[in-house]
Length: 74
Figure 1 (cartoon, one colour):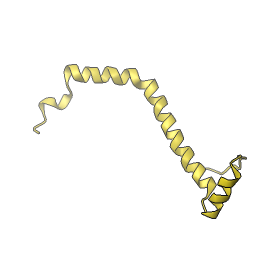
Figure 2 (cartoon, rainbow, N blue to C red):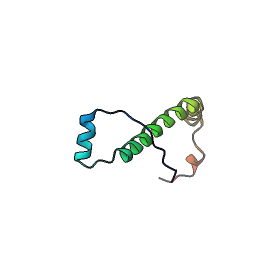
Figure 3 (cartoon, rainbow, N blue to C red):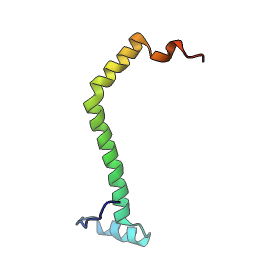
Figure 4 (cartoon, rainbow, N blue to C red):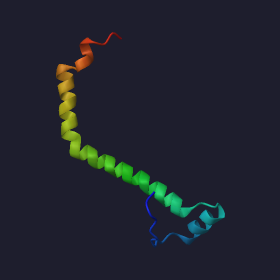
């Protein structure tokens, strides 16, 4: 587990109050949401960086098939 770092955030005070009312841990919620957002962004960056290679591979499979085409019995 990484160390925690205090940060300052500004949020709507009524939202903060309601979160407190329902015992929502804002730090935990932010961390989980940030992890989800980062995962999505990293995925988009990876696809952008590797899109051409993926397209070339898919085209090669369409043209030549895959190694196991002659081995599959189903």
